Length: 345
Ligand code: APR
Image (cartoon, rainbow, N blue to C red; front, top):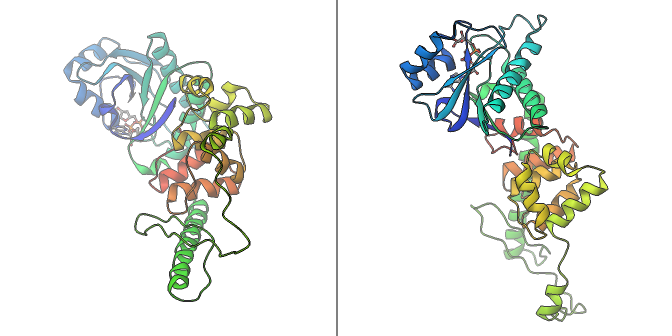
């Protein structure tokens, strides 16, 4: 997955290059600049002193000394002055210049802080969106693993309305699950009617195996032979994925880039008709293909998964699909706000 948004201290990230949100003197400062210089040790400062400073948007590469990376890329972000002074373009060039110099030095992985979103005052949610958009467009033609290291949750400022909509959706679904479970308990010991479905609930409920309706005319179907059953194997996850890519008129690259899945993993899936992806990878493809909820459930089932109403991650995914919002960035903002793992990103 080429872009990973992680909550961490950037000085702990093991990758080829970490990016420092520096100031024009390049002689260290507070925030991430201070953290990087402290972790790298004196050697970094001595090398920076030879650079003679740098301008906003200009990237400088040094060794990383005691940091767990090969290089440090020092970049000076724009100061936020209200958004009408070219801040966006300058911030975009910070990401682009850093990626360019990393690619020129054969880096296969890079970690960014949210440049300018601290002391320089850039609104964090806008800074994050610019980072994701600029990095995503760079990765169309380049293969590199990019970490966006978010230090605090305020970077994701999900709108109040979206947050409350999702919260009530989660409550509704979770209440439904509880209600069905309680109703079935009463039925099991109370009235004679029973539900004709098996309800698998969250960990704190045992699986509630319910009787199928007693229907004397409906005999139990004769079990086909094992060979017959194996020969009736359904379309696999990979086969459905490739079929849907064709049906949507997408290229393979358009699909796996939109799903934020790297080319190597996609070629594994394409090359193995019975490849079993992870649940988040399967969901990322369903979102990239903008599948309906029914098709999403079908594709997940072919990978051996289901969307369950006993966990928030699944309910949030279901919420976005039902509302036909396939913007993986907004989905991740919501997942992040609810402390769930992120899709692809
Ligand atoms: N790891 C990852 N992210 C961090 C860390 C860390 N150890 N420390 C801070 N951050 C985050 C902040 O939360 C913010 O979101 O990095 C982002 C950038 O904040 P700053 O470091 O303040 O950088 P910036 O806003 O670009 O201002 C640059 O601040 O530190 C001085 O010398 C620097 O003058 C320059 C100015």
